[in-house]
Image (cartoon, rainbow, N blue to C red; front, side):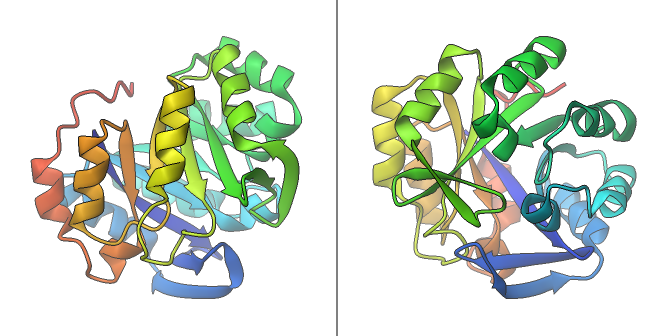
Length: 246
């Protein structure tokens, strides 16, 4: 298992939302590229970025900020939020040099489109974000909830060749109350897909539990920003050799 620090972007600033509510946010940095550099200095190899504005409106609102982060660090970066066209995927992967893109709304609405991208770029480059609210998949920056149960969606993803997912229980995100480990246990019992634990991580014990459950990875956001986790220490202890990013 490996650990990925997270930067959520809104209006060019690093923020965190509470339960996905755009009206309940905390600003942690007005210079996100310096945060990324700090993560690299701590020993991180990977970075998770979400364009919150993009997720909400389907555009690349924070593109220049992401470009600046890419230029300022050697971290391997995965980006999600507002990536809904082949042109945007190509922009991130081919022009900016992002290592992986995360599709959410686009994957849910058009599995054929997802399959096309998997064929073009390979499953190491195309990740699917599965955001869950009350058992169903949410879209459009968590503002809309579909009628698709999350387990059946994950099984569909597996069938068409998706290897990597980021799975978030929206009710846990930004709450520092611990991840929904019951949810992850259910997913593991019904699917062999690799998933990243995301949302609610509160302390070192959550990292240890994810490790003991042999989960693929875990994202650390608010717990670091609020001083609940010694990220540098955890990164030094993490075995990150099984993350085949190119």
